[in-house]
Amino acid sequence: MVAIAEKLTKRRSTFRFILDRPAVLGPIFVSPAILYVLALVGAPFLLAVYYSVSAYTIYNQSYHFVGLRNFFQIFGSDIFRTTLLNTFIFTFGSQIIGLILGKFGALLLLRPFPGRKLVRALIVLPWVVPVALATVAWQWMFDSLYSVINWTMIALNVIDRSDAPNWLGNPHLAMLCVTVVNAWRFFPFAIVIFLAGITAVPQDVIDAAIVDGAGFWRRNYQIILPMIAPIVVVGLIFGTVFTFTDLSIVYLLTKGGPVNATQVLGNLGFQIGIDSGDVSHGAAVSLVMLPFLFVLVIVLLRFIRRREI
Amino acid sequence: MPRPLATAVREGTFYSAVVFFVVLAAFPFYWMLITAFKTNSDLYDLGNIPFWFNDPPTLDHIRYLFDQTMFARWLLNSFIIGVCVVAITLATSLPAGYSLARMTGRNGEALGIGIFLTYLVPPTLLFLPLSRVITVLGLQNSMWSLILVYPTFTIPFCTWLLMGFFKAVPREIEEAAIVDGCSILGAFVKMVLPISLPAILTAVIFTFTLTLQEFVYALTFISSSAQKTITLGVTTDLIRGDVYYWGELMAGALIAAIPVAIAYNLFLDRFIVGITGGAIK
Image (tube, rainbow over all chains, first blue to last red; front, side, top):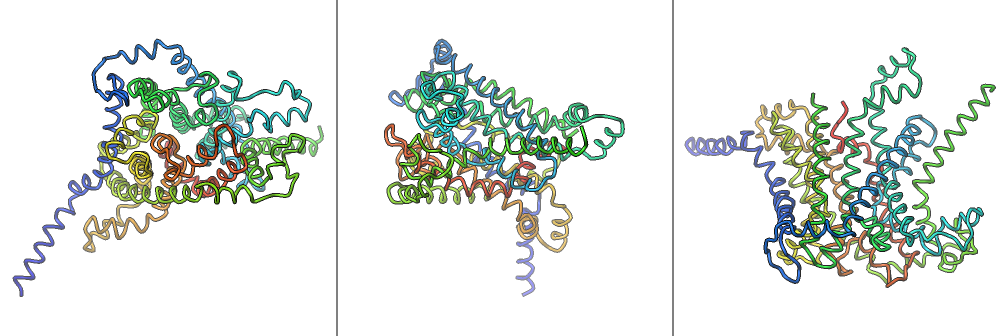
């Protein structure tokens, strides 16, 4: 009896000895997540890089190496250069509009007033509702015939029915539309980021500034803004990354048209790589995003590190 | 200017600005709502004032959605995908987040940031190689491909989120459990997980809503109606040729959007804390 009991205790403690060592348990705990990400993000990423320097299409599945030929070809095409420019206009245009609206919206929501919770819930809708679903509402509002925007302008005698704009059919207006819809989607995110930052500024700092005679604008731009800069930059980088690489708004509103006037990198990569099956050129188009993303991530890392100091 | 007048002007400006923001943000959704319940004759008559019902409201569009389209199937698909992705995400992110939160020194921090950065690798960069992976696995045109792929962004996001929450759990709780005879694993399961339920619930909600919001992978991998998610089905399947069924489209978008909007609003503050990683202390 005694011997058996001793044996049991001993075996149990050997097993527990392994599970009680953080050096063993830590890697075991963290490895499933890392393996999943390596297998389905890391490996596909390398495959994307290889696609871009190969002659792979869905019709001719050869991994024949062609060097940088695909990149020279896409940079040689007018459509691609327009697309690259559009992507930057789309990204920075919408981020700037979104940030301005976000700053003012946050100033409003800082002040307590009856119904503030409900107002906040309504204002964040564009950001929380799945972007594809919100975009179809805009598509309906931009309808060539039944546009509610045109109806209102006609009713207010701003324009005449005969020269009512065809929002998504005119190249310049279409570019404006996709940018504005993206800014509309982004500004509530900017509001909540600004709010989170401003409410984290200690009240005694603001009180001290008031005592020292700082007015409203001075408090805002010389004290609060520098203090919330890190959180705003982190939010802005998120917005920029997701806008720069997005295709859903452009795909649903214009499919890149009319005649590539609103084409962006994500959508072009999709059209070439998936719709036409020219995987290698599609991958090359997508990979053009990489240097830009890389720069953004470096900036992001600097700001994440800064908070540790 | 006399004081009361100045106050009135200031209040007036303030509330007009609030109204401007609310209209800007919410009008498209109001438009969705009203379109979903309008009769077709009302919708497509330019003589009517479009902002309110000229004919009595109708449930025709919603009935059409459930009777004539695969809307109910898309809802079910999205639900199944959401539940499976939540299960995969929790099974991997909970231990990973805990382990990273307890790792001391630079390594844990660097590993955590590394995992989080993969959240920023965009679908538009990965959809081409991933569709090859999906084909090799024989999952093309099946919603199971999405269950496989969606954790690639939910795992990094939730690991980061949970890591932050676990860091706030005092080590003394585990140490007390270990002194009382628990293993580290036992302390994690019996002590840390129960008190982290709010954090786990947050991770569940965000994983679920992220799968509902996803569009690019669904568009790339799925083409048959029966396998589509709700977001993809509503936005790509309710258009016949060049004819748009605006009433049905808006009704479908509305039904899919409401639960996400409510869930997000309830958990918004936690989301902000998670995404900024406490960039300000």
